[in-house]
Length: 233
Image (cartoon, rainbow, N blue to C red):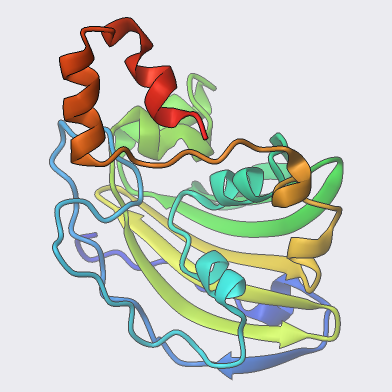
């Protein structure tokens, strides 16, 4: 962003839960490099040979750390874990009075009809084209990053726990758009209901064929049986 910052939203403004801040300062993962305009990737680090995320607060489980640093793929993570559809319910989305380029938005994320996240956002649009598209309802605010192939900078600002929940506060920034977001999760995020998988699921285990098996299959001339023969067992 050039000369524009995200509008701050304090945890007290968006949640009544008693919270303990694990890290109240900007601890941040290093900002992501913005993808070329031709890229259709969203939120994942691409092309790096080494990745280290510094500043993740202590006191969280491995799965919770994945949630805290999820950048545009939270819904996919939860959907994969439970092997269930994730849906989004918009509670409200409206422009701020006196500042039509700033929107306030709140949504619920649901999996198996259970709410696993409440996200409160303040979204600042500093591009006339983005504002026009949102106002004309051609595209929703949540779709702007994908619509214009923007890979946002991600900065984790805060994370902490409440009595029955944990939360994160972060910024997503790209040219012409800035989102300040607070997400609150139940403490039992990964125990909402029984997730399928493991030995009892009857899932088939695949193995990678050894080179000698590949050569044997090629020499056998029964190439049509090759995939089944190698991956059975």
